[in-house]
Image (cartoon, rainbow, N blue to C red; front, side):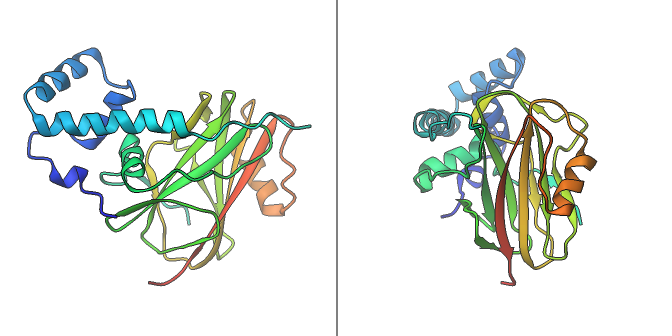
Amino acid sequence: MTHGMERSRSEGCLSDLKLDRWVAGELSETAVAEAQTHVDGCAACAERKRIFSEAQQDFAETAPALVAPKAKRTPWLWAGPVTGLAVAAAAALWFQPTETVRSKGGFDLGFYVQSGDSVRQGETGEKLLPGDQVRFEYTSETPVHLTILSTDGAGVISTYYPVSDSTELAAGVQVSLPGAIQLDATLGVETVVGIACAEPVSIEVLKEQVRSGDRLFPEGCASTEIQWTKVTP
């Protein structure tokens, strides 16, 4: 499955990132007007925008139903052409949606993997390679303060999200987080824990719970776990 959308565009055409932000409603009115003017005169970009728009609609229609509530840090990177709805477009073109990881409290965490030119929806327990890029998405029925922590094969705990001081996110279904992580060369099982809290909680407090293995997160927090194994090619 080769991602060819970005590579097929001509110089001067809209980037996948700009199309992503346009369809997501993140562009200014001026930027939208400029993009629309270009699309009106460019059949290739008009077709690419159609794919992005259809991918967004497809994800909204096929997203799994929310469950009712029950009683060596690597830098974040823009994953080349795989950004936001670019991933959604790849998903719509290449594979059927699969159920994301479930947790208590109406909070889910899923991810996509870019390995070379191939993009796929990730599944917990799969094998990944050093250099693969991972992008997370979340589903929450309420606004949350999200933290994503990783414990790699050497026992090192890293913060994958947030990338700034703000952790607050709006409610949404299969919302892609900005940027991506590039996996380092540490081999073995890596455990990723997503912690969604109603109120801000110190990352150091959450790290201590992950480090201890108790996972006794503060009241008002829901968590879910993803595991993958980094292996040599």
